[in-house]
Length: 194
Image (cartoon, rainbow, N blue to C red):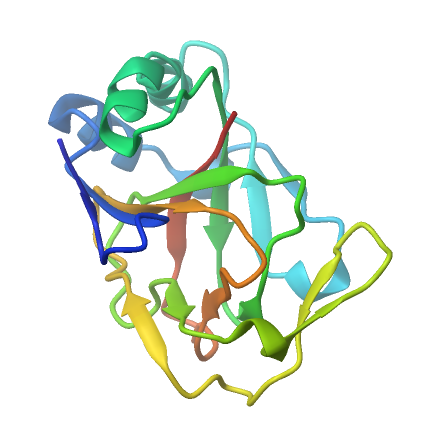
């Protein structure tokens, strides 16, 4: 397991080899089209499914394993991780996720990619505070600069057992460039670190 900061800001980390190979291989043997799912509640996420792992499945085993990593993550990140909750996302044809900032209810998050899907990883951008508009709603932070943003801070490769941890804040702008074609699928584990 390797967790490294991508720069001196220490609010964005690359994560590699977090999942034991035996669990990862078992998860990737599952026919994802047979796993129960919920559609995401927003119209723009019609191509994203939140998979619901069956009790006793390799996916449930992976979620249980991730929950045990709070001490390891605390040591690597320099702050206390009390709990880790997770969900599986399966993104398919026409999925896109324009640059955005997560709402302040998300303190820190980790996304671990479970398959390979070239050129579809999450891109983080360098933005200035004046490019962010504050509104009095649940989203709170809105990017109002160039689309797409001009300066890429870091782009994570969508490779199996690779991913990122981000500490959310007002200028943590990120998204997925482009749109998935009919042959592409992104399978990942998204975790809320509390």
